[in-house]
Amino acid sequence: MRLISEWRTLLAEGKLDRRLLSLYGEDALDGQRRRYTDAVNAFAARYGEERKAEIYSVSGRSELSGNHTDHNRGRVIAASVDLDILAVASPAEGGLIRLKSEGFDEDVVDPAHFCAPRPERFGRSDALIAGVVRGFADRGYATGGFDAYTTSSVPGGSGLSSSAAFEDMIGTILNHLYNGGRISFVEISCISQYAENVFFGKPCGLMDQIACAAGGIVAIDFADPKAPVVEKLELDLTALGYRLCIINTGGNHADLTADYAAVPAEMKAVAAALGKEVLREVDEQELIREIPRLRESLGDRAILRALHFVEENRRVLAQREALERGDLDGFFAGVLASGRSSFCYLQNVYTTKNVAEQGLSLALCLAERTLSGERAAWRVHGGGFAGTVQVFVPLSRVEELRRVMDGAFGAGSCKVLSIRPEGAIRVFDEE
Image (cartoon, rainbow, N blue to C red; front, top):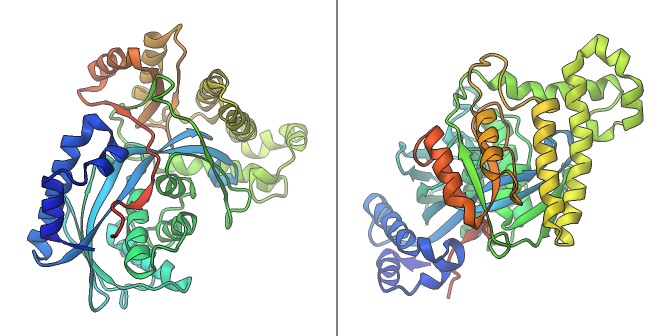
């Protein structure tokens, strides 16, 4: 742990550049050096110049395959990306947590008093902090107070999981300040999910938290949600001549809660009608045989969504195997098939409440027109209905795609990302 003045000097003299290069790449070095310096200065201005502090980073994430499978105990492939939440944090006596995020009011949480869910605080960041602390305590881990300043390049509402990265950040700080860094990223992710489900009031799955924390590309199997199987996959898109682009279409997320909630609800309703808790437990042939009965009780869309799950869960396994044998064409074929299934059967590319607004449909159409004939792939990204699409783009066509997408959806709509090898970390090792 170093004094604020030491961090400032090391950054100014370029002595931390090698580490920054490993996380963000050469093109981003100057900007990241300024960003880290600004964060150190902001912490000092608010919490004191003479403090000793550590610097932490948690990446955003991109779902590469497995659209709406995790909540029914399915398989996914996901990746950490080079947008992140950065935190400068220092331990504090008394157990009080003070956290100032750039652009937001300071959160002040006393875990001794905010130790149970408060419905009036659902949806607020202080509830996530309190929930992570409670999750640590319930598992027998040490907790304590700290002061922190955070800044984020993970845009909210982008499908890159800013909330999961924030939860993982609180857990990562507590892990290193009070637990010697010994807690695994999977357990921190489970605690983060608990905080979001119970204290924040959002019934999310576990994919986002794991993908933000793990680093690189991971295949996750949620057959046992209490002990998900996480395996790292080796794929260097940049070395293969590709970049991952996320297109933010600027869709309106207002009033879409019911659309998002209906997807897992309809899938689980099909499972329940077949005597199971989730679709992962359902026999595919029984599902097919029972379609006439299911149509009468649940309607056609629920069946289509269930069939999407069955095939998508199988597709993720095939894509994982393709990546393991270096078969990029096989992986891309799965991306395109996943996108078609999401559009036709899962039906999460636009909301029927406002059929005039179809930004995701338009972005997918523009990607296909721009990259037709190329070795490339595109699909809806994340929850769907509004927000973002994902495109795997040859390096030679990235600027063309950016021009097309920014022209349609506004400057900065096309974010060109790299897959980051590290997820939730203390950035600089202690000497």
